[in-house]
Structures are given as C-alpha cells and as structure tokens.
Amino acid sequence: RNCANTGTSIAERKWLDELDISIYQYRIKYEDNRYYYVDGYDEKTNTVYEYLGDYWHGNLKVYKSDFLNKKTKKTMGELFDYTEKRFVKISEMGYNIKYIWESSNEIKKFSSKLEI
Image (cartoon, rainbow, N blue to C red):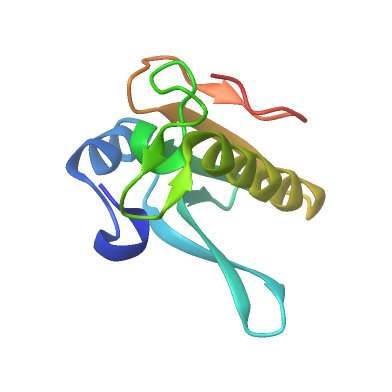
C-alpha cells in the first residue's frame, strides 16, 4: 500500500478499529502549509497511531538497506531514516506515538528510536 496515494489499507483500518481508534488520517501541522498525516489519532491520550508498511517505510528486517523502492526511488535505508526522523519531529511536538510494522504483530511505543 502507498499511504500517500490510497489513504488507508484494509489491514491498517482493521488494526485501528481493533484499538477503538476512530480518527483516521489525522493532520499535524509542522510548518506553514506543511502537514504530517498519521494513520490514527486518540485525542484523549494525545497518541498518534501508525501502521507501517514494510515496503513503504523501509522495514530493515524484511529488506536490505540498499534495496530500492521502485515507486519512491529511495532505498529502504532512506525510507527507514525518513520515517524515524518524522517520528522524532512528531514526538518533539508533544504527541505519543504507537506503531506496528505490517509484518509484525507487536505494537511498539516510540521513544527516540524506531524499532524493527
């Protein structure tokens, strides 16, 4: 799935529904006219939820870091680094972040490093 083009995937929506998250594709402003879109948001706990597609976010347990994503023209290492930097910025803005990799069944809480 490609987050930017399709919005949500069936697996992502199912995961958010299981967690009882009803706010999808939440928009976080980080600069003038620039936004991060996150998969889900819980306003009670100020928690962002992200369902990370292995191919789209660079899961280094699944792909070698130099493997090229043909759609984005970026390596898996670059995609992983971008996702981690994005999480750092969102976290610095005061949001809690919980995420899961597509190929995993373990929900992780982001602190300062993106775990695979």
